[in-house]
Length: 313
Image 1: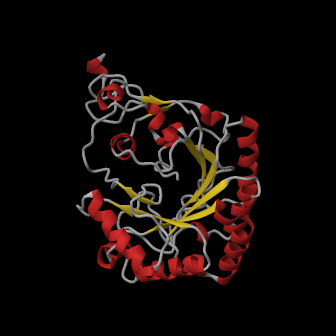
Image 2: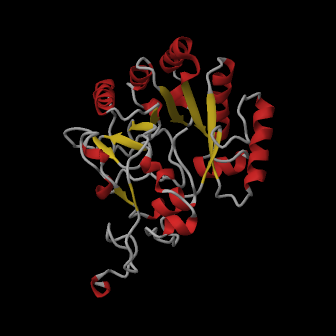
């Protein structure tokens, strides 16, 4: 058996390179249904896991009709999700963003939008839409702002010169209109967790942002997802060794809807981090997406199992 196995990692969905059974995760206790609004973005980051840019339309725009279709399925399947998440690309590049958000809010879901809070969000039409949604639904709507580092220089190194100030301008607008926001940062900078949170706390205090730097749900610090770094494969034995449960991994509690360029319809992906990996495409319906997910990718190990990270709120 071992002689037939590839010596490379993350090849066989069922078996690791050392011949051990690969860990898998069942869908349980669903918390979040994600929608990728499209990979187009107003900027191109140095290390974007989804390769978003002003020209990458590998994932095309979803519409309010698409969202409604899957919200109907969500209720039919009785998943019990509490939250609808929107990610991109930059979600506010999508002309249907306000309508898609309203579709979810009017059904009673909490909505989380991941955004860089830059020019696409600051367009007058979008601002008017956000103000209307906030007036109607209040803190059921949360915008998670990408602030890769609390220091302007390091943030701009990742996102381009001037991006830190443009993001702060958007956050200032959200603050002035009492729209609930949280922050997502990165841990690539070599700081300890307390050092990073202290830096974010100073940034929030300087601008009057009502964001808790010490709350991991309000200031989410993501591990870097570098596919060139060697990471261990997760076997079924790892759950006991690491004292972790498969129920703690993101694909146990969420799925993501995407639409690939040229596809006839959207499809459901196991993980927000892996929209381009065919084996994590689970089908076109939520029913098809209820099957187990084998952790056959470096992100599964570094980001989710070992990093303990989750994109949900």
